[in-house]
Length: 55
Image (cartoon, rainbow, N blue to C red; front, side):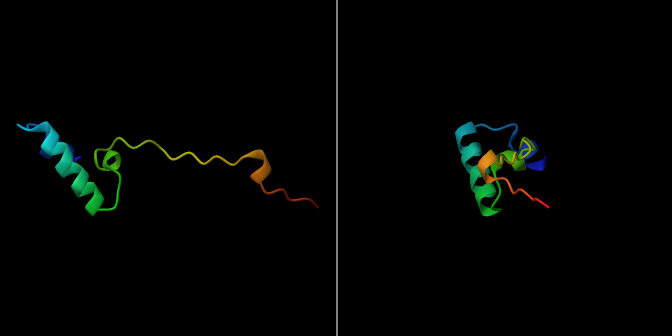
């Protein structure tokens, strides 16, 4: 994404990471999502927590 391109040629990588984290925090989103690396969410419903419908 644009954020990743903006951070590529950096002279101070730790500072760039810190700034990227601050941007993500300000947008209330994970940094991985801004960088386009977020994996799909997985929803786990345990056997005892499943809803069961019976006729």
